[in-house]
Picture: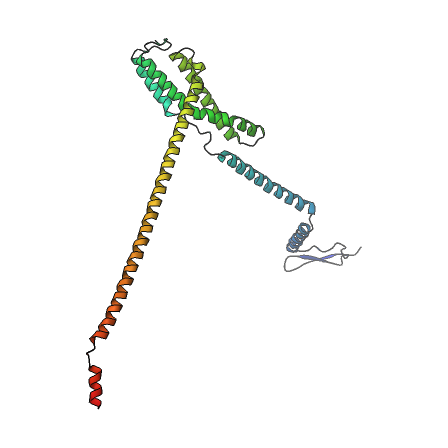
Length: 287
């Protein structure tokens, strides 16, 4: 076995002389090792599994599709909410409050609900209250007919999911309000006269149709009167235009006659204005 001599170098390191050559590979500097690790990581990242990128793309597309469907659903709900806007934003007519105000006055005057009226000599309170209730029922007719007309259509739309929940609830609220009003009118009718609740709505419909027909006839009469007045005004305007044309023609004829007279006068003035023998005297002078 060879002897080994240890030498201490000036920088503090130690070397051995006569030792066998080491078979271990030299250790590289730590800085170089870090750079090598970074390069290796980049190689791994560049050569990563494509399935990961595909999964990320699929997840991103899924998120975008979810956002799109949610936005489409909101737009669809807004469309159905705004459909026919104020169709079911109904309010009871002013005749309802007027009826209860009159009822308070009748109660204060001594009228008793449910008291049979004296048909031979009905009290003023009974007559006044009956008229107020009929006026209230007539004012309710447009609401009743509106709900009856929309009922089948709204039920069909809701069953086919073609209207929003908000619009369906709005319809239900309007229907409940009108139904409650119908029952209240019937109850008030029986307080005024027993059994009147069975016919009051039929009577109200008849009066409503009569008033509607009368209103339409008045509108038609007003439209006919306006059209007739317009026709008369146009005829007067046309007549005045014809008269103006005649006057213009007469004026043009008068001016033409005056022009002819002036021309004739000028010719006469020229022929009569030359002195007699004027040309003859010139001839004598030449001789």
